[in-house]
Image 1 (cartoon, one colour):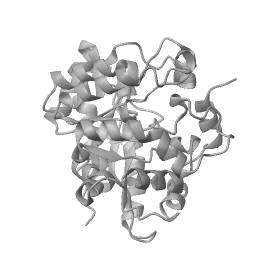
Image 2: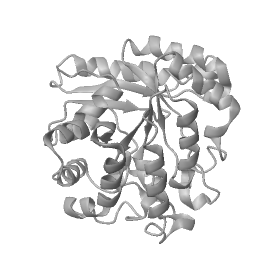
Image 3: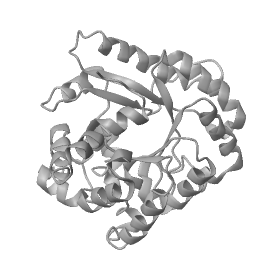
Length: 315
């Protein structure tokens, strides 16, 4: 049947500044965005471990375009999260310093995904990129140690059954700011098909344990991706915002209850989340979900936490 992630790659072959601007100007009051690495625009030559710096060089150019105000007063790519292969150990420090230089004040940290499952049906085209237990690996942790030294943050993407690995990492590096992406990616696909509800209790227990690590924050979103199994093919009709909010509510409310709004931030995760809904509907769903929270909590969820964690001032 194919995997939903293949649909995303086929249907969004290009998502650059023009496409982003179109979404940013589609009706919501978007003040700025954080760029999240996706393996794009790597250098074609030079040392292998420095090729990833090309992504930061490129994105900083987009950020400079946006900062000109020619395209309106939104700050696209106001903070940049790049990638470094931390499996190179302590040598990662030099690569991180190259990113900092290339970002001209906008580089904030890296993401190094550990997403892994033995069933190829879970990750689809992303299967095989990681081995099991990456965040527990000794050499990876030697590389990870460079982040705190340079005052950089770490975005963690892994799958719900792997959450104990992140708990272990967060405890080992209590002074490094960590962001859990996509509320830990609940699974209802591949060998987990039909098991989303069954696994909720395990997910909740791990989220509540992770919340005891004060250095961890959470990006609340990513739920329209294929992994939860609510929608399996991109061409299926998008549900209305009210239905999205209903599907996501147990995960959103549990995460905010565990971490508090000041450590949670709503994320668009676009264009990947286009798999399950459009940009306008996504933010409408978050607005529905935020209705019960106080004004201060709403500010944290929609902007404050992201501005603090990624050190961005949009005033």
